[in-house]
Image 1 (spheres, rainbow, N blue to C red):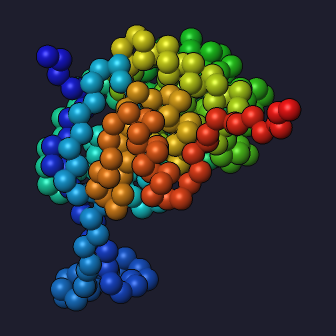
Image 2: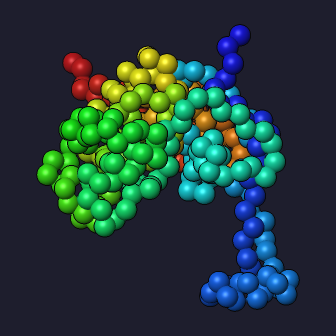
Length: 259
């Protein structure tokens, strides 16, 4: 039996939220030293059990605040679970937010070099890759303009192009595909499918269940930090749609009058 490349066992994540508004770090420090800060516990994830096998594309859906991004951050080792066990095997390429790790005052080209180094590429390797990255991102001459002039979609396209120029073992994607145009989404889907066939594992979050159902072979529905459903995309999307009063596309019926 094959071993999962992503394994979460009874994982819970708790955030402590101050009950009072604290206006400065100085005020926070004074209150903390005097033990005068009152908190409420917010559980972003509760008792999550998840296995993702090699070459699977697993989609995660749910309302805002359901714990989707926290789940990706736990897998990426950005957030440590309050309880439970997390095991991940392989190199991870995380796309957890638009333009994460980018510097607004640097050009797109400079950000490619900076971001690529954090992913483990050498400078020489990046110089060989940059034309290919720019072409896939489709940002043209903007590559030599400051990132602050980019739209959110352009930043997302550049981030995806950098992270996926070489196939990682595991790709984590958080809503990046939602900001691109139809042509770019198509290219992303084709690249993901090509890499999946080569053995890459994908964990992807989106508010577009129909888009995920098209790309994924498994889906997870999170609700208030817990797994509400897990299984085939068709079953999970149907349950999610029924719960949220969304309309699931149905085959069009022939309404012509016969006679």
